[in-house]
Amino acid sequence: MHDLFEVGTVDRRGFWCQHDVCYINPQTNGMVLKGRSDDVFIQRGQRFGSADIYFAIHNMEEIEDYICVGQKKWNGDSRAVLFVKMREGYAFTPEFKVKIANKIKNELKEDCVPELILKVQDIPYNVNNKRMENDQEIFYNSKSNIFLHWI
Image 1 (cartoon, rainbow, N blue to C red):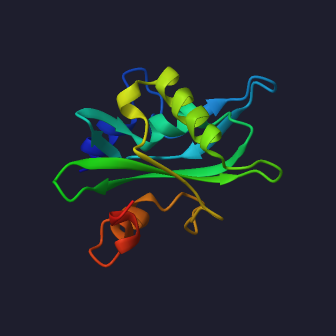
Image 2 (image 1 turned 180 degrees about the vertical axis):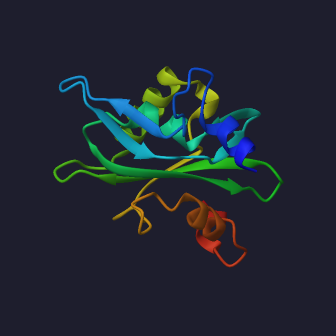
Image 3 (image 1 turned 90 degrees about the vertical axis):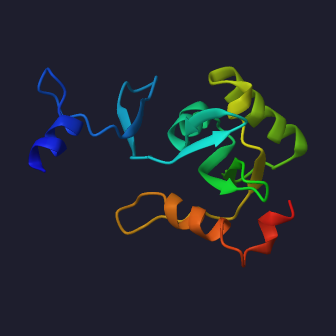
């Protein structure tokens, strides 16, 4: 088991590679570590992950925080659902949703644009300060959650 762990986290040059989501701040050249994102979606035949979405939108000044989860659709397909928390002073408008979609389309592909983009008041984190993607995905895919089934 230890060997399998090392194979997945240490590359051939001996560097630790946990594959966390991070980006480099262009003003400070400092690295901002956002935490690991393993969720992968298949939407419209395109395979991508929440980390891809986070990378595409991380520098949008209007957004304070975000979480992207996968949701199984009634017909067996799946879709990505992006929840955004707006910074104070910015409004979540239809035009802003188009701006988010265009940013993701330009950074990734059109098929990677989440089918549903919603505003939320807050984003859930666990005690380790990581987004609770898995718990949110379980909730949004539960049969008792009627809200997202009708959107």
